[in-house]
Structure formats: C-alpha cells, structure tokens
Length: 241
Image (cartoon, rainbow, N blue to C red):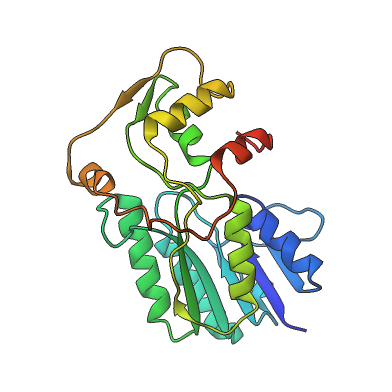
C-alpha cells in the first residue's frame, strides 16, 4: 500500500485531506510538531528524515505564512534521500503576477519543487473562506480591504488534493477557486450578519503595485469553478472563525 505523508496535516485543508485519504483506506502519516492520535512527530525546520522513511508520496501543505522556501528546500533534500516518488504542493492563485512578499516566496518554492528532480504536482487555489475574517482581525476589526475574492472551502481543496495525491505526477495543474466571486463589501456584510464583525468597519483600498495586481483580479481564476461550497454555506456550518 502506498504511504502518503501530509505536512500541515492539522490545520486548513490538511485536516479533511487526512480524513478523506484514511476513509479511502490509504496509509497516511499526518506530520505535526506535537504528538497526538494518528500523528507522526516532525519539524520541517530541522528536517523530517524519519517521518519520510518509506513514504512514496508527500502532500506539502505546511506554511508559516511568511517564508516557506527554506523549509521546503529541507523537505526536498530529505524527500530525495528517502526516494519519494511524488510531491504534491498547494500554492496560491496569482503568485506569478502579484508582487506580495509571501506570494513571491510561494513562486520561488514552486520553482524549487519543479527543478528538484522529484516528480511533482502543483495546485494553486484561491483564498480559503476563513481568509476574510483573518484579514479583518489583522486590521483590528475596524478595516477591511475593498477587493473582490473567489473564496474556496478547505473541503473542496482537500477533495482535489486527494485526487492528485492518489494519481500520477502531473506538473502544474489547473487552478481552483470557489463557486462565486464576491465583492469585498458584500463579504463584509455577510460577516457582520453572521456576527463575525462587530461595530463600524471601514472598507479601504491601498495604493501600490501589490494592491493594483489584486484589483486587476490576478488572484481570481474566474467562473465556472471547481469548488462547490459557498461562503454562506461555510458561515452557516459554524466552521472555525
């Protein structure tokens, strides 16, 4: 049986991905820095040779949301030594067009994977449904960016990753996004109606190349889309804020 190691297995799409693969009878190792049921302990910062021993496929979801390239380079080194035959990487729509530091790093990470010699698949997804709430909290609950988004459910991303992880390496595959494109002010209104934004919130638009690229829609793959879960469905599900 093929053994699949999932980094970032305890958050975001990693959680439903591990559940999907295990429900399909797959041998899955859920990498985590902390022990727990069904987990294998490891830390990308120091290398994960032991966790990779005998793994044929790696699904790389772990991110520190700042700079992922160094961790991925260590992972690639360890994966090559372990003889991994397929590495699946989750990236972000627009990393090749939006000059945001984290996106620039994601693109460099994609390039490192594609030139590593390890057979790979790269999937770019839009922002998760939780992203607007995270931005709102980051801005102190008082401001929100006036940008269109095509948010996607982590369950939809996990379903696509499961397909890719159990298939042959495919290089860069088609981008995926949620089933609707929503204006920033519409998203804010929905967050407020759901009690996830309190008090007056000001919609803002910022100058500069990065926000111009967002306003031009480089982070939106367009419709029809692969995802099926709407933003309202996610809100009503009671998913983590």
